[in-house]
Image (cartoon, rainbow, N blue to C red; front, side, top):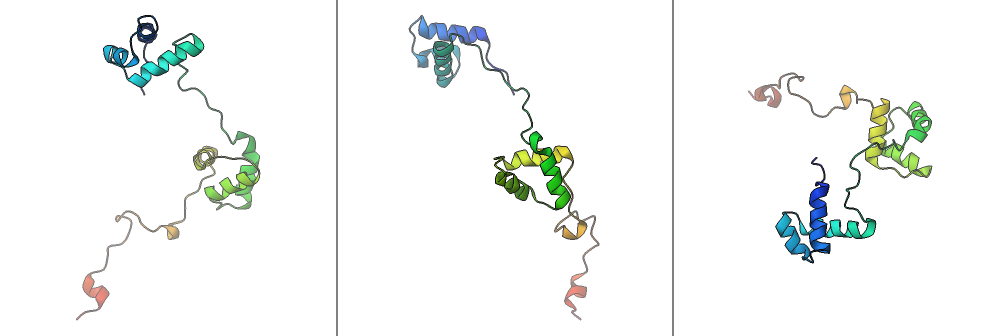
Length: 141
């Protein structure tokens, strides 16, 4: 992901609008940035007095860390619990969390499991025995 535009460019764009009296569209064309970008930079400057970009990225705490014991207990009670079922159990406790957050947490905790081979519907053709000839299957003479 590319980084934010330089502060020098931001300051020159805002200066052209604020001090130079240029329109936002003309400023955008002159500096090679989008019109909405100019509008946002001018708005940010008027609200905060700075054109500095916000922080990108950073640490995000795990949403379900506080419910680690509950999740482990649910999987101990019901090992084949689905993620949707766990999401509903958490919702019943008042924890609103997305399916993706549940998947990330369960995967990080090592609680996910693979289905057994009898439950697999498709797979690599290398793992299956060769198909019988049509004559054998249809029983024709």
